[in-house]
Amino acid sequence: MVLGLLDRGWEGTVWWIDTGAEMPESVLYVRMFYERILRPRGVRMWVIRPRLQGLALPEYCEAKRLVPLAWRRWCTVGYKVLPGTRLASEYNVEPHEQALGINAGEKRRMRERWYPLVEWGWDKRRCIDEIRAHGLPVPIKSRCWCCPFQRVREWRYIWSVHPGLWERAVAMEENSRPPTNSGRPGSREHLTFDPHGRFTLRELGERFAGRRARVDMIVSDAEEAAGCGGTQSGECVAEVAPAILRHYQYRFGGSGAGLVAEVQVDGEE
Ligand code: SF4
Image (tube, rainbow, N blue to C red; front, side, top):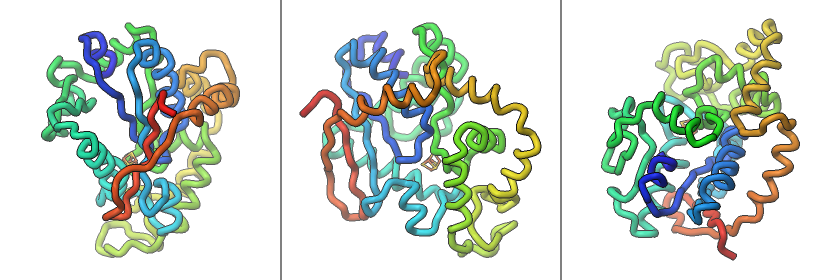
């Protein structure tokens, strides 16, 4: 969407909300996008880091003995919708000035905002073509590594490529409290990322362990998606992390609902 807007002469600021659980590939991709596309054009990007009771999403889940729940969406509201709404209100950005990247195949998700991709008729396929036409690698699906909407193959990707995050997600699930809605089908002794309680991550990991052969292939896909070319992913992180940390940080907004957003503004001291 941003590429299309820039090609049409749009001027504005790009906001990216980082829940603290974004996939490492997405963090790297956003950084790469900023360096290759936005910075050369003088476009500012804000990385917004919302906090509930001072905690990023994974730490909040661990402290409250919760997991993100597909049937409650409390994480979306607390870490995406509220911070975005509050930031827009803080900076007097009207809804029709807020461009959201819902594509033409997802019209059902439209609300009172500006949806350029729908306006242009760009579906997911067209977005991928445009990204490639601009000489960029196609990113992985943006999501939290502890997202309950992940499919089994996406959990498998985390198990394969990010064992540390996988272990943390397993521990998060096992540390969670019993479901209060005992009427839900397949309820277990603790909450499960799977909305129907059909499996726990530990059970899923045991299934994955029998099919280890595909791991190398998935790892190389991940590096390509992150725009790392032939480098090792560790080198890529080492190169990018200092640039991320350089950014100016400040806090904004009240804390009526225990919500504080940490906003990073590029290029300001
Ligand atoms: S990506 Fe998933 S876990 Fe993250 S905020 Fe959205 S619904 Fe919640």
